[in-house]
Amino acid sequence: MRVGIVGCGKIADGHAEQLRAMGRADLVAACDREPLMVERFAQRWTGVTGHADMADMIRVERLDAVHIVTPPDSHAQLACQAMELGCHVFLEKPFALDAAGTRRILDCARETRRRIGVNYLYNFETPGLRLRELMDERALGDVVHIDTSYGYNLGGDYGMAVMGDPAHWVHRLPGKLFHNVLDHVLAKVVPFLEEPVTVNAFAHRMRPDGGDAALDAMPDELRFTLAGANGVTVSGMVSSHARPVSHAMKVYGTRDTVELDYAARTLVRSARQDQPSALGRLFPAWIQAVRFAGNGARNTGDFMRNRFHYFQCMRVLLGGFYDAIEGRGEDPVPHAYILRVATLIDGIVEALERPA
Image (cartoon, rainbow, N blue to C red; front, side, top):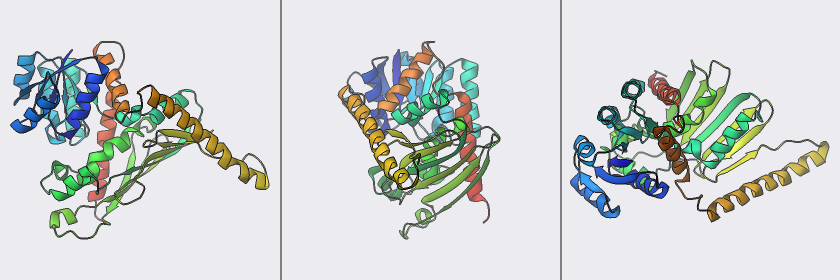
């Protein structure tokens, strides 16, 4: 397959790296409205031809698929245009600005019979894949509650870019700062929630005044709760200030509970006290140490087999996406989950806009 990338910002290099590493498709073209961006991208990735317009790129390069990594307010128009021109589309998150835009893209995919994917990569991280196995085995029983947390480091390169530029595209999102990461948070929990889902949320700002009214009006701490029609509940936190920066989830089941750390790539069963009295409090720490050691050994093995790099989870996801294009599997992220994520983001944004 011949593939092109639309948008030559920082994340485009991650997509290019995984496409080249997979060897499943030829990255032959890229486009961006900014000539310098596409020129530099083509210099970094040999064999890539630069273009200024996506439609021209698709026609001239005879592309089979495109990866769209532009800001999300352009996704609906670009994705539909690409599919109408015959391309399968893989979208960077956020999938769209809202549920209406999401429906438009998904409807177009059905009408054109093109595959549409989204970079919900953390569902394909090692602990996420292990959680899926445990659910298939019914090892946790019925899920009762999920607690999830995600850190947004405003002191990092990306955080500083967002906070240093009031015109950055993140500020155009309905959910502002949180909207940029909520796809990652919610994509992990929607498989457990049945609709309709009740949404509550509140947000506040912890950082000191910076002197810019628009930036100072933007909160940096989010808390939300979700309650599915099936009785499963979720409590969530997006934090810019909690340290260490968190990316974790705890799934409570009727048989067992597991704790996932996506940054450390670990999944362990929660400690339980099976022995009486003081002995019951002595053993769990050692049992947990053994469990973490097992995770460490597995991660070391993955490292030795070159399966521990930063975007390993994206490579797994893209493998599933290209399998689906070739008719060798279903979409790795079901359309229903994509729409449910968008609907929940709309619900959180609406909850934050309600009068206190």
